[in-house]
Image 1: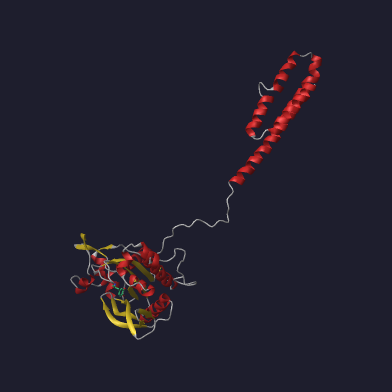
Image 2: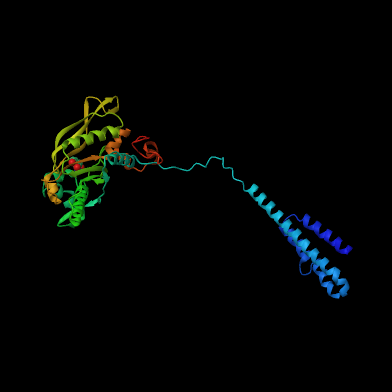
Length: 367
Ligand code: DAH
């Protein structure tokens, strides 16, 4: 029995001394494994007299249980210590500032498109789209440019090889064809539903193309089109809407005037000028004695309404179109249009906008 006590003390000490789970496992195998010391003692039970076995058997079993419990407890302790050590080693300092990451910039054209959409969105307009490659009907004929009409030549059109209805396809010279597509879809919807035409209020921003290039012209540029159609919208609404747009866009009071003009697709037609003054090389928008044109507009021509199947005796409305790139140059003081499309990262870094600043009317269009 003394031998057993000595063995228990020895193994208990080894369990306590095991520095990690592997060492503990070695102690367990040496004591309780197949050839372990305790297991060998138990095998000896067979050779004992029944008398001896009566006391030695339960004593050995109890020893085995105690050692098993000691090992389990030590194992738990070691696992907790190991976890502690790992947490300490892999500790993350969450107060460290994040590593800087390269950040892109929003191009002034995208910025101005967003600003324009926010302003007209607030007035109840929705954004509409059309294709860059147009057919002659949508780009010209339906907009009341008769075949062979000289106004077609003013557009310096890029013609494509493909044809439709005997006329070459074109790169759209303006965003006005989106008017035709939008009205055609609305007429179709009304016809299918057997319902009257729903009022239309859209803007159509997008790319446009003309064969032209200098400091203020590039072969590809951007316009935004506007269209309102219902039963009672008149020229007064047009003027209020566009004057309001100018002041909101330039984020200051802006003088406006409407000058009679001619477009095939509107009657009457006008151009809107805004007041400005010059201080040295700088242009100050809003007040002053000089005027500059920023957009074309007018009441939608009855022939345009007829071309899409809308009765001009029942419906009317206004349309307008303006150059987005020019709006950007004026507001943000960018002198040369060609730089817009030169893909120079330094230029974009200088004139671009933070992607985190979303234009809105509550906290400001341009941040
Ligand atoms: N489409 C014209 C252009 O590119 C701009 C324009 C003028 C659009 C008057 C309109 C408008 O809708 O009513 O020069």
